[in-house]
Amino acid sequence: MTLDKRGQPSFVIVNTDARMIDWLRDHVWVDRESVSVKQGNPSHKPRRAWRCPSRQVAPLLQALLPFLICKKERAEILIAVDATINRVWPSGQKGRGGPRLSPSVLEFRAAMVTRIHELNRRGVQSNEADMRGVKPIGVE
Image 1 (spheres, one colour):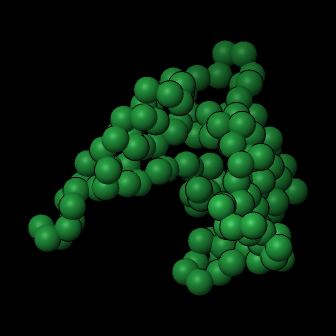
Image 2 (image 1 turned 180 degrees about the vertical axis):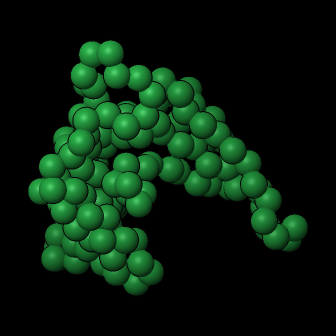
């Protein structure tokens, strides 16, 4: 989960096991998913990536939110940013662009891009306090 430089939400699941990506394709209904296979190092297994279209990231994350532990703050950020995206354009307008965003929305998005990049940096734990007292499954 991340935001690109323009503040658009991005949700990608990468795995080396094709069964996981196939399960996502069969059970998670999005308009236009994208699945790619990459082989970086020849000694590594090929990795598969499942991408959700940006306009469907927020509804997917809303459904996943109750189940997220480690990535919950990132999901909440993406949902908040998605709420600032105006998908209804003035009549007659074509192509890219859309209506101009207010300075406060641009400032909010820039702050969220910075925050999500901080959270995605290796070693950063967003909700250590939330994890205190959580026991692993099967531990009494």
